Amino acid sequence: MGKAILAIDQGTTSSRALVFDTEGKQLGLGQQEFTQHFPNNGWVEHDADEIWATTLASCEAAMNAAKVQAEDILCIGITNQRETTVVWDRSTGAPIHHAIVWQDRRTSDYCAELKQQQNTVSDIQSKTGLLLDPYFSATKIRWILDNVPDARARAERGELAFGTVDSWLLWKLTGGKSHFTDATNASRTMLFNISSQSWDEDLLSLFEVPASVLPEVKDCAADFGTTEPPLFGASIPITGMIGDQQSAAFGQGCFQKGTAKSTYGTGCFLLLNTGTDVLKSDNQLLSTVAYRLKGEPAYAIEGSIFMAGATMQWIRDGLKLIDEAGASEALAEQTGDDLSVYLVPAFTGLGAPYWDPDARGALLGMTRDTGIKEVVTAGLMSVCYQTKDLVEAIAADGAQLSTLRVDGGMVKNNYVLQKLADVLDAEVHRPAITETTALGAAYMAGLHQGVFDSLDAIAAKWQLERAFTPQSNADWRSRQYAGWQDAVARIRSQR
Ligand code: ADP
Image (tube, rainbow, N blue to C red; front, side, top):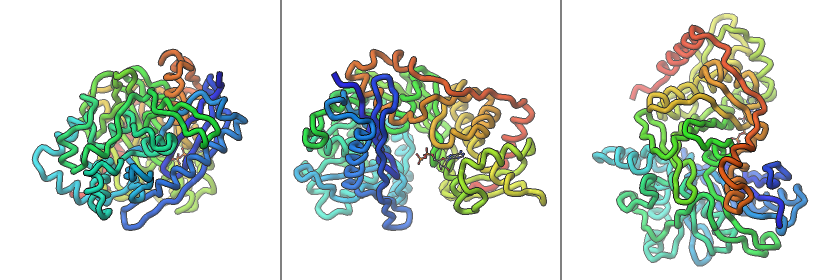
């Protein structure tokens, strides 16, 4: 009987692996960064072979750090950067092109063209829960098939396979035996009907993607195959698979309708569980599969912000106002209650709920006595206000959030979490384990292997480290938020 679970957390800038014991305690970590390729303006690529090599090396490092052998590992769970698209040759296992990363905008003209077609946007939204955007995999697959010589013909002959990063890693781990994905990753391709839980023929033909390239879609906890023995020295079952933001929500125990988590890393992703209902957003949020177990999907509504921790990186590296992001907390504490300076970090446009790619950043409300601490504080506050924008959009769509569970590198900052509670007028809870993305994948794999009996058993493991309770009054809240809304209105693009 083994005693550990290996979670692979394949991210946008680094590949990571964590070993957990069967209680969910972290035993070891391995991590490797890999190359970002920017071959053109707005293009972002990864070398899929490098993704695989760094993942494998991270697994070995995590196992060494945890002092476990392959025989000690009960199962593997995979979580991954979503939407990023890999197409490879089924016989050689070689990618036919670099992976096109979720951030890549090369298909934006094509998306704009499609938006002119009547009903396309609404059909896509009602089937997939998504907005027609280059972000998702469908137009990226089409681009590869149309731009790599002979690719389309080879795809039609069944010689090529498509996968998001989960499928690609699974293929490599199983030596080409498994070509599967899970319902959460499938839900980000813009080819998957989230209500019927099947690939959609109309969307396949709209985006000119032959069905022969697609992986089979499984539950998140399922038999995905076993690792090739030479890789780790023994064959290990792979029994969990879930996209990264969904995995963080799973690791945070967001199983009940109305529970929500927000991850504050480079950007911010907020997911609220909507239970067995697909909540169609009228406010430019995404509907997505939160997880699927025993054929039963649970859904979530999702909002994403481009600049959260990245705003602090800009303040640190661009403006050089602070030496490290952590220094922002003490400075903000000195600012006091006058928060009349607003920083709108629309450096790459605005994400949800505005989806305004042409908006640009601004610093507003300065007076002669505005100094470093006010600007730093405005940077931190921008994260709170942007979250409020998401929560307002969620409320307008008819869902309520009472408590927000938070994770990600930025949640070390107590000032941000207190102000977040104040701005939202909601409890903000920071868990004892903030490695929730990897933990979610480990829970998923362990659930299938019987390490955990039920979702209740997993939910019971969640431990509060600190609760932040609203201390603001209604006047302050409405004044501060009105100031933010005014600042955003000034920088929105006119188009
Ligand atoms: P990612 O996984 O997206 O790379 P992380 O979850 O590791 O990001 O979080 C790192 C981000 O959090 C960085 O952008 C950094 O600026 C920010 N950050 C880290 N510590 C703090 C802090 N104490 N206060 C504010 N921001 C912080």
